Structure formats: structure tokens, C-alpha cells
Amino acid sequence: MSEREPRVRPADEAERIEVKAGTATTTQVLLGPEHGTPNFAMRRFTMGAGGGMPYHTNTVEHEQFVLRGKARIRIGDAVHEVKAEDVLYIPAGVPHSYEVLEAPFEFLCMVPNKPDTITIIEE
Image 1 (tube, rainbow, N blue to C red):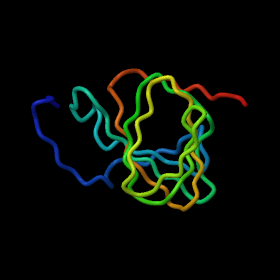
Image 2 (cartoon, rainbow, N blue to C red):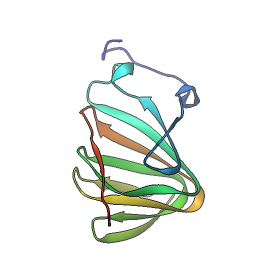
Image 3 (cartoon, rainbow, N blue to C red):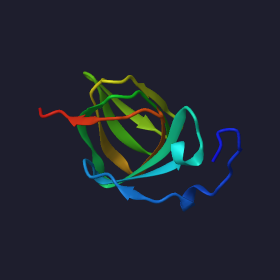
């Protein structure tokens, strides 16, 4: 697909993939390089009851928009409780984690179309 071609498709057509590093967590690539987007990928994460992600780093930045639910998110040394309509910016390399407080916790996550390495931080 060319990056100059618009795209419209139902989000639920995107395959749900289990996030192995997480607990009760799935992701979907709603738009990404395979859809012809030149700069960013849009992903949807869904975390169930008791779900979350351990403290980790990524090599790419994250811009996130919370759709529903509540979670405790640690970014660096700061802890935030987030809910629907909250937005987050997590710079590349900054450690962060997620703990679901109200499931399902669901958010959109936009990242650059660059290689991303996840490193779990043992505490």
C-alpha cells in the first residue's frame, strides 16, 4: 500500500495478540507500516482484571490516550492513576509499568515506525 492512499477499516478487524511480557494484556496494530503509514503506528492495548506490564523500557517514545478503565502507571519515579480521557507521553528509554485498577483498561498507543526493543527492569 502506498502512504498516499487513505485507509478506513473497522478496528476490530485487527488481530489481537497476547503481550508475553504482560499479564492479561493484548495488543492490536490498528495502523502501521503494513497499512502504508509512513511515520507512526497506532496500537490498542487492552488489559483485563489483574493485568498489567512490569517495569520496563522501550527504545521508542509512546504517546497514549486512555479509552476506558483505570490503571496505576509508574513512569520513572512518579506514580500516576489514569482513567478514560487522560493522555500520557513516555519518552524513549524512560522506565514505566502498568497495574490495572479497573478493568478492562484500554488505551491507544502511538509510536514511531522504528525498531523497538523492550527491556524488563528487575527490581
